[in-house]
Length: 261
Image (cartoon, rainbow, N blue to C red; front, side, top):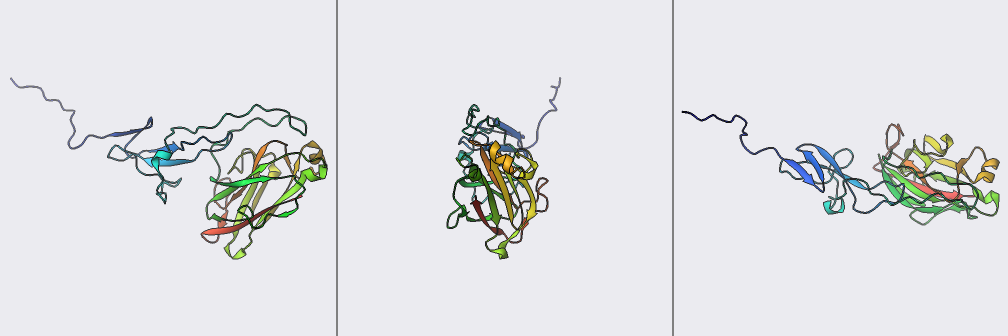
């Protein structure tokens, strides 16, 4: 007699899945891998996107548009399947009175960008921060940047009122950009203290801020901030739903940022 034939067979190599660091995908699918370092409370994790290749292994890192990243990132620096953040502190009373707002989830960002450095605001200092990485830097077309703002209370109420100025030092490499003050880096929509903490595109912008209830009573038109809370001054040259029409006329745009009281 004849033996029955099994019809479920493959010609050539069998299709494969990728499985790396507990992240699985079929060939042609994309998966995100997050940085091995732990992000601070409320901050986004660095990540890369990798494609599952027919070899059964994930390919190199891709950017948000699924284009190759140059230089090629080291995959061993991105092995977490999810974003790992440090624990957020329990809100406590601030020196200016009141309780700071609760921690927020900063993922995803409207415009991912680099947090340039810290800026302590509401100090007696007056003037632009010339001569440093804060005062003068470049932001690429379609990209964003953020500056971390550390707030505190000064004895004089007037010293708790100030303004942040942003513009182009070299207008030949300028463009239209959005700005915001938010609890999160790269955020222009979800975690702003008030609608007036956001500005539509322009070539220069000044935003007044007031820290604490006494200062806010004197300047109700200013962006209201609380002492002891971390905020971010965000800049966007990216045309996104949150920042439509932003652009840089060249590959990179020159920026200056300063704090005035």
